[in-house]
Image (cartoon, rainbow over all chains, first blue to last red):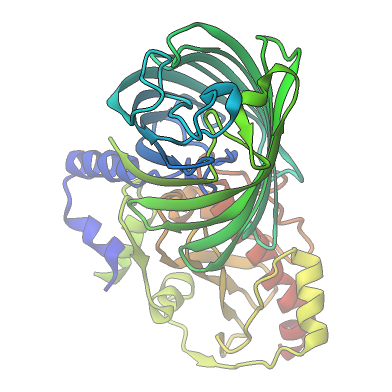
Length: 305
Length: 171
C-alpha cells in the first residue's frame, strides 16, 4: 500500500480541503505525560484539542472523604510557542466523619469537614454535593524548546473563578529531554494566590508547590514514570504565615495514539504537618483540608478542528 | 503510475494518518533505472559507539538494510525514534558521496507529516558527510514538527558518517 499515491486522484481543491482537515485533526501536541506536572509540549499553531480531566481526592483521617474535580478544557495553539486554553470546572464532594481533630470536632470522636464542605453543614452528618464550580483561563509561553535546547523553560498563568475558590496560579515550567527525547525530566514551581469560599466564608490563602517528575517512553506509544509534590500553604494572599507542608509521590502511565491520548496518575501523601493556626487541618501526620491520603487523576485528550 | 504517485509526495497534500512506501519504491524514486543488491554490514560495538557520538542518536543503527547498485550508489535504510512510534526512512547516497535524496518510508505519528514534504527533504540533497547536518543550522526546523525534524536530521547525519567510515571504501 502506497498511501501517498492515492492523492493523485484528488482534485486540487479537495486535496487542499482534506489536507487542512486531516492536518488539523492529526495535530496532537499538548499531551499530558504527567498527571499534575505540566510540560512544554504545546499545541502547534492553529491546532485545537479537547482535554478532559477527572481527579479524585480520597481518604482523610477517618470515615469517608471523596472529592471529585472535573476539568473540561479546550486548548489552542496561538503560535507554536504560545498556547491558550479555557476550562469549565465541576465538583462533587461526599464526606462523612472524616475529621478527628478536636479543634474542629470538639468533644466528638469524629466530625464532617474539609474542602467543599461548608461550615453551615451539620458537622455530625454526612455531606454530599455536586455542582458546577466555575471556569479558568490558561496561557503558556514556551521560551525555550527542550527538543532543541538543553533545557526548556516556560511560563504558565491560570486565573480561576469558582464557587469553591477564586485563584491565580503561576508556574515556572522546566523540562529536559534525554535518550532521543524518550526520557523526560520535568519540574514546575507553582505559586498560587487563592480566595477560598468553600466554607461559606472568604479566606485568603496562598501556596508554593514544587513538582518534580520523570517519564520514560518504555515502548512505542507508552510512557511511564513518577512524580513528586512538595506542598506548602500560607494563610495569606502573598505567602506569609505558613500553615501547612506536605509531601506526595506516585506513579503515572501515559498512552498516546494518533488521534487520542490518555494519562492515569496516582499520588500518595507521604506525610504532612501544620504549623501556626492551621493545626485543625492536620492529624495522624498528614494534612487534610483539600488534601487526601490518595489523589488519582485521569486525563484524556482528543485533537479536533 | 508510481512515479506520478511519487510526485504527489512532494505536494502539500500529505495529511494522511500513515505514510508507507517500500524500499523498492524508494530506490526507483532516488535512482531510477538502477538495480540494487542488498549488502548488509555488521555493526560492531566500536562503530555503534562512534555513530552515537557523532550523531547523538541513541537508538542503535542496524546495518542489514544497505543496498548498492553497479554504479556505486547506496541506499541506506534507517529508523529513528518518533513522538510515539519509529520513523523509517531511506537515504540515497551517490557514488561520489553526496545525498541524492531522502524518502520517508514509514511515518505513523500524530502530527509532523510535513517532514515528508519535498520542500523540507530537498534541504538534504547535495550534502555530504562533511556538512553539519544539524537542525537549525543547515537544516531548517518545521515548527510544530520539531521532534521529527530533529530526529530525522540527526539520523541522516548518522547515515552519512556511516557512509564515510564504512561504505566509502567499498567504491
